[in-house]
Image: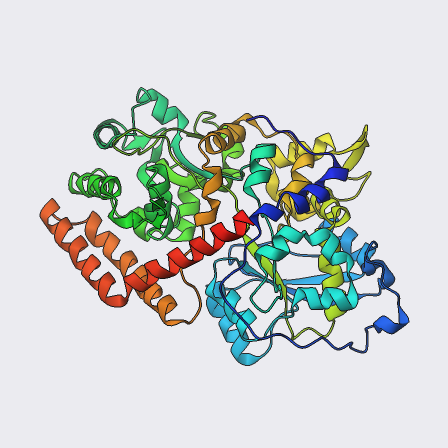
Length: 552
């Protein structure tokens, strides 16, 4: 898909203006947080005249340490060793101490809230229950109030669209998202941020004759051929199938998107789990298990096992986000088996053969970043976030230091050739030594940084193009409709979701179709008793509110 990258001077304008049409408010409410008081290291506003047209971080670049919790237990980067992080610290005076959870981010943050001791900065998935708990429990600052007092330039660079999207009923905004996209922006630029794909190992798939995997019959036939002829391939034992995120994601939402299951019908939220095409494909997986064509490893493998199999091209088919293969595919392409990398192809389709409707990016973004009230330096924290949100901060973290990792080519910053080579052939070295591109993604703004991205290697671009071409750009509004937090309806949904995770293996391993039907019907009965009607009402209310905001 053609990329019409934006000139630097236009990015902030577009980030604000194009997002306005998508502004929407969450239905949650929280008590207004008190105005932050200056600490000993804070220069009172009365002594410094703040200019809303100029960043305030330049007023104080003395050394200060800020802790930053990143709610992803797989995130393994450090701060202070890489070129980009050292450069940012030298410029701003802010040294970051990164923290990651050893287990689930929600549990980790909940424990920290109980203790009353939180890191200065907190980044978590926008969908996580703990996010609303942080807001409603008065654990984090209202960013608009911090900006009013310490750095009004924040409003200029954060983007009114994003701030309005996360504005609560009390008028405050407690978080800013990364990777936030509006439908208007996606239509204008072709940057959809879609990453859902159906992947196959290229050499094995083509040697099998590129079988049709879009119908239950074709899918089962390919698995039978794999079992009969390719239990091992080029010295590797082959696992037939993998679904990212297991039951709640890969085998539910992701598979439903591949099948183009509608999110709503006649203006009403659709119960996608009971869609006939979705049920038919779950029964296809049951048949595959009964015939010994798949096993349950895709439901039980640990992250370590998944990584080992992926790195060694031991999966045949994968329901997987393509960007999770960004490091693996180039490595496989450069291995002794250069065609053992993965390509995106059409996988399961509905009975009409419709093209998938893959989730694009949306205004929620990926993760949201907050400033906790445990911080002793709220003024430095908001100023640092303002810097990171600005075009200057985006460039410093994404490209690094001019002259060392990038240079001006005409009027556009461009990575040096050796950095592009590292991206394609040694991402680990690039991240550890230089810390550029997507190493520190917590405040990443695609509107700005995508104009600087080097062209992707063909083994990555093929997957990206597949996702972009099948992205349902206007479906981002359906993300995050499920109730979150501690409300009764949220508790009901948590029980239903947990039970679905338990039921899925029973469906896949059912001895026959009659047993499958019985297990599924029993689940529907339990779901109803848990309060599913209230969940659907919540989803409908949330969707209606989002539509109303889009129409403003």
